[in-house]
Length: 346
Image (cartoon, rainbow, N blue to C red; front, side, top):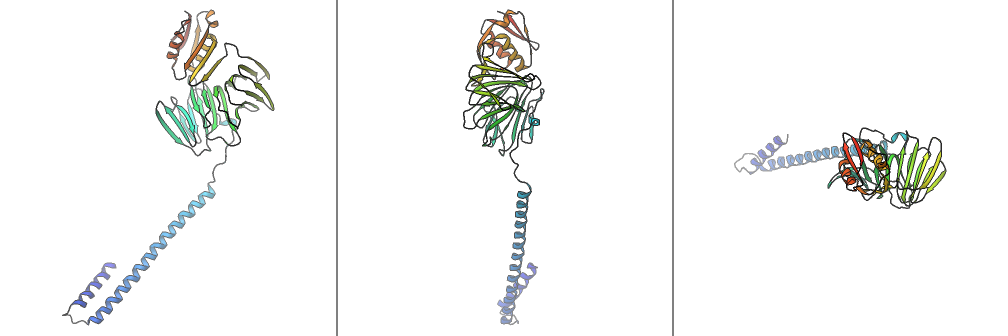
């Protein structure tokens, strides 16, 4: 339509300026003016139509967004339940909210920073964003170990067959995680208490400290070994306070608690990226290695079980590297053959 209209305007304009034309110039200018007015009205109507369509589209979009806000409200803070703790002896599992990663990131270390979960492998890192309301779950299978730094700066190391669940951002009510297995803690001091839930009516209350917990639900026993600070084992409404260099054993089935000063064979802890051993009985050290790497141990003499070891071992070493460190002590001889750690007199 616009092309035909333009042709009409051009034709009349040519007649207006053609001095040899028999058409009346005044009449032609009048026609030209009318055509131009009509063209202007047509373009104005078209712009109004386009504008109304655009406004309608924007209103529909806004309506959809508002509807989505009312129908998809933000998820409230989730409470811990017993079903939320993963236990899998065969797979390394990390869950971040609804996302599950199986046998990924097992050679990394995790740090939680605001709304980001960062996995470090050497200098390489991978970041996963969160909303701050997700639960993070870590399951370490047999023969593996893993470390995580929480958003408050606390460090946690999980030994073989261990699991923890914690919020990506702690609430203002406190710092609570759920755990099972053999786990070492280095907790940052803060106004908010730190609590480790083990099972119903059984938890560890932490007051800024270094300690480790052994709790496997199928064994019906748990133990705490405290190196620094103060913790308490809360059973129902009762708290049993533990001071530095003390250990606590709790027989869950028989409800029997025993505490004692840490003896040489129990003083194993994790700090600054290393295992620290202070006069540890070789029998206990071998049990630790057996659990960490899911291997068997063979003592070739009874006497060797009573020997002691002191030192620190970086937590990123493999089994064969750890054996080299142990052999450097020159008080016993250690070999790893076909899935078995062999211990001999030196």
